[in-house]
Image (cartoon, rainbow, N blue to C red):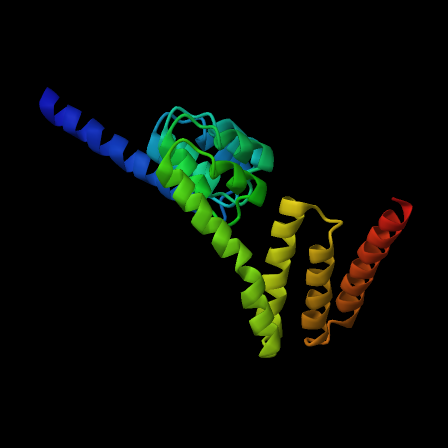
Length: 217
């Protein structure tokens, strides 16, 4: 076998090995510790797949949030396991593509989206504004679902809304209490009585706390 043929064989083996690692990094049931090891590889394609995998640990994603590749950091912004602290740091990433991806993620905390509205890049600003508008329109969608007795989807929508509102205006706010009251109705419509009562009680406690705070002021 000639040296050229040997080089071709080595290249083919290397390519096959890389493809195998990419498939492993993308596997939906990959073990977190395996993904942690793959995150240390130099191949950016493999590392990007790790950053996209929902099985990746927050600690792995934190490490990848400072990776030299903007594609890897962009993938981190879309992973549901990425901590809010890491997302806050990525909102100041030097590469606009990373901030653009973060601005387009509906799961990005509202506080971060609000900050991205002040970004120096107009495309990031526009995308953050559109994402915020979509998040805030969840209330209208949820109310319509509840009105049409589509309780399961209304439940999911109200939970999304409550999470966004708590980030934007805090848990102890009349709007949050109102959303919990409606969530209780959606749960009751599915005969989830214990959960419904818990949400109703939470809403009443918030209203009472606000009333007492107002009386004390």
